[in-house]
Length: 199
Ligand SMILES: C[S@@+](CC[C@H](N)C(=O)[O-])C[C@H]1O[C@@H](n2cnc3c(N)ncnc32)[C@H](O)[C@@H]1O
Image (cartoon, rainbow, N blue to C red):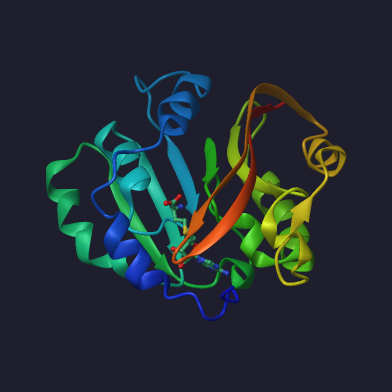
């Protein structure tokens, strides 16, 4: 199994560049009141930007963060969208404070920060949301193959629920199945939560 450090995210992201946006994008926008008055989205670990670009096509201003800069080559698409993507080529764990946003969005990334950095980053992400702001993120659960890795955060459902104290959970989906990661077989346990900040 590759370690998180050894994964060639650039190669993986180039491969993923053409994928359709995840359904979670539309769910997050709907939970944030639709796109008649689009606001700001944070996309943590944006990869090749399929989801960031979809938010921007729907008029939202996206701050996309990633240590891999595949998305930088796609920002020319800003010319053709009513919203826009601003790319931050940085380690999420090193961001001191995030811009205020109506939606915090992240898929298949937050757990890669590891337990300590995830806890620190989570506080900053919650702080970026106003009352009524929407959190649309996934986290790895304890059935995941990566649960034996100290450098990846894999969390029991109770711990994930505790992170969402102060939120109303709108939707929860769980992926708990055998699959693949690069050349390896891998069990994925990915818990996706859509929630609205209460206060
Ligand atoms: C599994 S990919 C997910 C990409 C995209 N969100 C998706 O769902 O297709 C993980 C992404 O997180 C980025 N990443 C991993 N650790 C990171 C960190 N500490 N700071 C910023 N980006 C990171 C990788 O470069 C990669 O693009």
